Amino acid sequence: MPDPLLRPADRDQAERLHAFAHDIKNRLHALWEALRMLHEGPAEGPDKAELMAFAERGYFSAQRDVERLLDDLAVDRNVKAERVPFDLTACLNTALRNEAHRLTKKGQTVDVDAPAALSTTGDAHWATQILQALISNASKFSPRGAAIAIRASSTPEGVAVTVTDNGTGLSETDLGDLFTRYAILSSRTTSGEPQARGTLARARQWAWAQGGNLHAESAGTGQGARFTLALPAV
Image 1 (cartoon, rainbow, N blue to C red):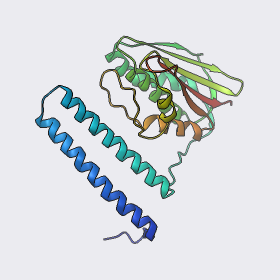
Image 2 (image 1 turned 45 degrees about the horizontal axis):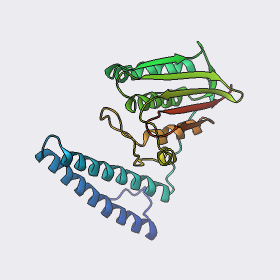
Image 3 (image 1 turned 180 degrees about the vertical axis):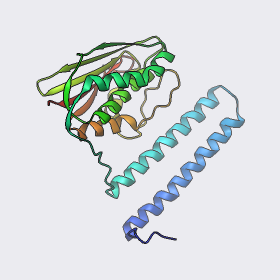
Image 4 (image 1 turned 30 degrees about the vertical axis):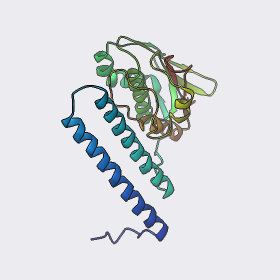
């Protein structure tokens, strides 16, 4: 029975939702068939790699369609963040502890250069989530035994934290799509980890909600990447 508190969709919205539901069902059916064939097929080989790539494209494409629909229907997805003084170094230490299992598993080291305390304005919870996402991303796209560098410092505008890796890097096209939810990028994780292509887009949104920014740089494929989180001064 329909919820009496929900407003019925208008004709245009109903048509979009109907088309969307039909398309999603087709994509889910294709993904189910790919999973069935992977289950029944060979453990390794070019056929498995092709099926995995097909399933990945279908998954990310469906996720992007969900995001577009939410945008088309003007669904408010703004992050609610505080803007109060907090210690960014403490957030960085928490993020490192939370990602220690991932780094240890791949034998990776982290070179941290940060003051004992670094005051900024924003939301400690979301700042920690951003830093954790950046550390996780650097680990996933770096080889085993790699070194990751993290630098935190004051800037004329506030504070900044950079996370630099020497991993798979980003092409010019990938850089342009990096902060698009569920974009299909050419770079691949080094040990088959899930790519979670919506995380960086959300991380930038978390930064914006605090009055800050998040951007990425890369000299190209195979040449690593650097992410910089900037937050305002106290």
